[in-house]
Length: 404
Image (cartoon, rainbow, N blue to C red; front, side, top):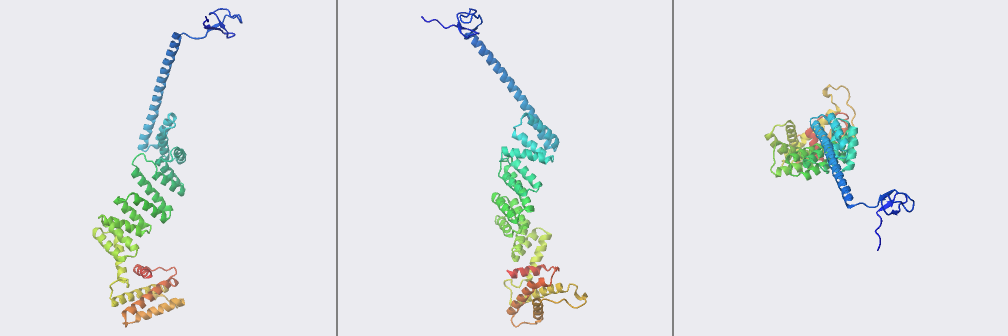
């Protein structure tokens, strides 16, 4: 029958021995140790280990809770201080919060905001660059980086960051924030961009906010500022077709049509606008469009005699413009007149002859001749009007119409 293995070993040579304290037959040592443990001992050891684990876990949980509470308190204090404009103090509390919770994105973003508004721009930028690396889609950090780039004159970088912010992730009020950011970008483009960039941004705004009436009016006004009269007229017409008509929209339609050379339509819209609201600029354009329409010899529906009369006035004013350039002092001038280039001298002579004509045989032919001479005078006026400007707005606009 096989014997049970010994439960004891020699501590010196590690060989089994028959009993505790017995002499080792190999090295004669009496130092022994138990090979195994009793079930009772194992149970006791495991129980102690479990208790120690529970105590340690409970302590760690409590420690972490207290640590998180301290960080949260500092964070809330920082936000309150920042809300009231105490950004320097907010920076201190954000820093304390981050000493506890270094990797909290909202804590770091709060610190970056406080640094930015306390004008610690370089420190703010360092924080924001790190935050952008952590979350490239965060709109707030990209917006602040755009503002910092704009402040430093890095226009291309600012434009890129603005666009990233627009399409990024906003924690609150995303539509309002996107629109506000678009207008910040638009303001930058108005100062440092090209008219094409401005118009393109306005088109995008209108595509994304087609039903916003107040926004449409604002966009149309900016179109006019950047000589995009066709786009402005389109936006204003859309509003008119929707039944949204007020003095501002009518004035905008008048201004847009004026810029497009549609003076009759401009006059009508401007007049309707003035009936609703008096406005100095609208009144000036209304008067000017009235004068243009009264001078234009190519207007539809004119009788031959009226067309001739307008052509006569047009020629007379064109000659008067050139005469003033030749002799701005008028009757006070003493001495021989300055010599004229041959083409201009010849055209001036023809103009004077035509104006001396009493009653033409054919009003239509005479009107055509007057218009042709007036156009030639206007084309040659730079030869006489060097560094001399004489305002005759109705005449210049009519000449623009004739040149089309």
